[in-house]
Structures are given as structure tokens and as C-alpha cells.
Length: 113
Image 1 (cartoon, helix red, strand yellow):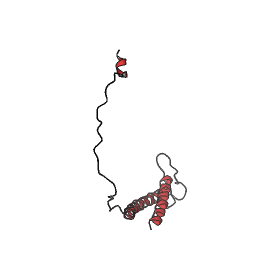
Image 2 (cartoon, helix red, strand yellow):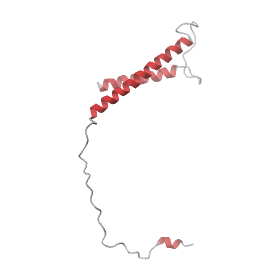
Image 3 (cartoon, one colour):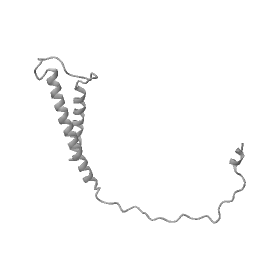
Image 4 (cartoon, one colour):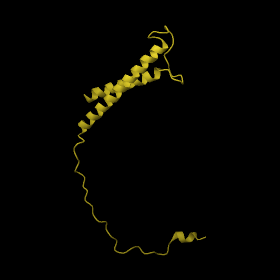
């Protein structure tokens, strides 16, 4: 079921991309307008109305299917269970017997100016 819905999601995404690219924009786009009778379905205005409606419904389907797939993915992975297998005990770091002595080899003191 999850794989089937993922494939449908891919087809809807591809269709949505194509619908957006076919619409005429201010920048030119790929635009399919032109030709046909001025008031019919194949006019520039009729095609723009159809493309904008189709884009809206493809976007709605994409979002709804994304929410459904997210819900199925959570159920499939079993995210409701907590993992207690990690060892979280801590130990104190080992202390050195004596701090390191300064042997006079301080290379930063040579930078006096």
C-alpha cells in the first residue's frame, strides 16, 4: 500500500510540475495559450482557467497524499516505542596522580616583543 501510494505521489508531483510549467507567467514560461476561438475552451483564457483549476486540484492531492504517506510511515516504523538499549551510565574520569610540571619550555614566552 505504501509503495503504491508513493508511486501515485510521484505521478502527481510530475503532473504538478508540468501544469505549472505550462501556465503562462509574466516571465513568459512555456505558455500554451493562443489559437482557437476567443470564448471557447481552447482560447488562451479558457486554457488558463483550466490549467489554474487543474493545478489547484493537483496541489490539494499532493498535500493530502503527503499527509497520508507521513502517517503510514510513522505507523510502519513503530515510532511509538522507546529504545532502552542505550547504556547511559557514567563513570568519573580518572585523575592524574600529580599535575604536569612546567619544565620551562614555554614557546609562547619567546614571542615577547
